Image (cartoon, rainbow, N blue to C red; front, side):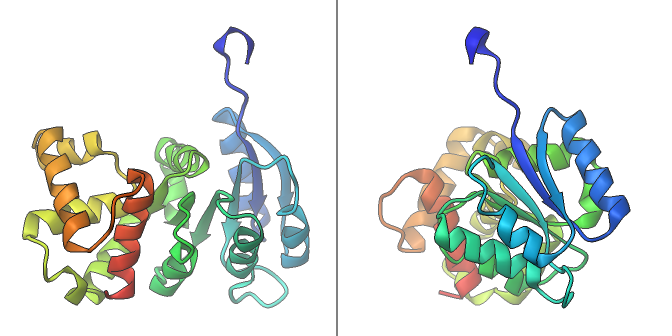
Length: 221
């Protein structure tokens, strides 16, 4: 953009509850995003996900007409058709299988947050931007559930490496992990490289290997 001004992120919102849909729209627009469309049902979402002017989609898991997993299914199908399409899914409850479905293609640019997190506006907007830029963001409660449900794949990792992987799954950068654990970024780099080695992840762009590390954890390998 001229003068170094970045274009606003173009976002799609899919949420059946009118108040939350309007609230999400206002939060995104106040945060510098452009909401190109806001929909409240599965057929409209399926159509809207075909738009070629989307930078990120914020999607409720459950949408009319069935209120089961229509939003998630539409997002997964859209990413199959357009690999790497950035999608941030919102859910009322922790559902480990939803996170696994989203991460299954290994492409990154995905997020899974509980709806309560929207109340922290700055953190929510940061998550939207991170997903739009190709990152992966998982709600801390989802990560906690995954740790409890998936201990065996982590047997080869040290306690510190498990802490680092947990923070990676939340979408934190190396600098943020270092700050949280009160260690240097160099130490974090060493832990991450050790995680990649112990999970048998071959050399690849680090962003992809971070996603693969979380996938290995989810899949129980």
